[in-house]
Length: 101
Image 1: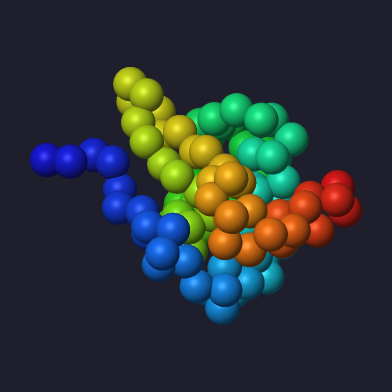
Image 2: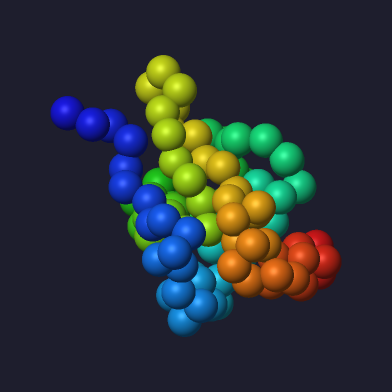
């Protein structure tokens, strides 16, 4: 059984889906925390004010929009910001989002 969840290819990125993912403040916080860290972060290591199950939903929305990539490192689900890929398709979008930190 494959543990790594599916991710959209760059050619499948959809601006509407990305913007809908970023409209939520919790999801914007996840993106800005990943950008600031510059490294992978485990799901449980984010500073979030929501329950674990709600956080799981937010990670799924971000993954399905193509903003993050998730993989396992041991038992931890790690998150990576897909900045280079987003910058390629939507130049300046993440810069505009993270400039307000």
